[in-house]
Length: 285
Image 1 (cartoon, one colour):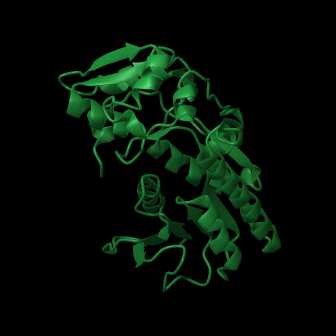
Image 2: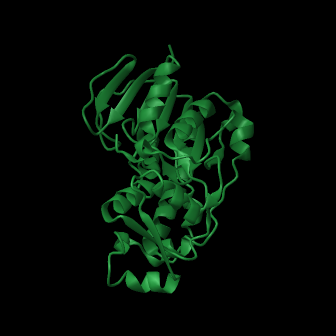
């Protein structure tokens, strides 16, 4: 029986990945900060990338569904033997690398450092690593973008956008990411590669928000105001919870963030769904 080690196993990508590994007949060692009861084919270990007891000496594949930089550090120090490593990063490595926001540039820098460290450690151990970069993630009710939109709009009965929120987006469902990780694991062409994993549809930021609001009954009202008014108002009003957004985030609402899924489709049959949300996708689970 094939055996996998999964970090971030109870997270928004890890949970559907565990389910897919079970369905495919894998034996899974799953690591989570929270306690879980063992299930058929799944042995849960409580811990994190800083410390976890009971790890196996070898597995066929290691999957990382959590912070890339922390995983790369752990992997470089670990002694577990595995021929295959699949890790999730983020397209933020490109989107935020030249941001006007220092914290965002730091995120991009840590992602880049994590990618380099992961590939270097894999090469030193004669293992094959693959890096997956999702776009805007949704589907498990744990994301910080669309689930937040739903919560705020349901609370206030309305949602505010700047009028120029026409930048293109490619929201990707968590289960499509889990499927991609499992497919990439068995694809020789994916060895040593980095893949963008966008969703199956490209649409404007405004249309993405509109479809998201449509899952609520009654449907909240979308309020659109000039960008300069939107930015100025953040300093004096919550705008339905937008108060924590920085200028860089607001500016990106009018910018296209589009990535090419062709390499992932070609190398391991990546086939993400269209963006057709329902209320369950934004209910935490």
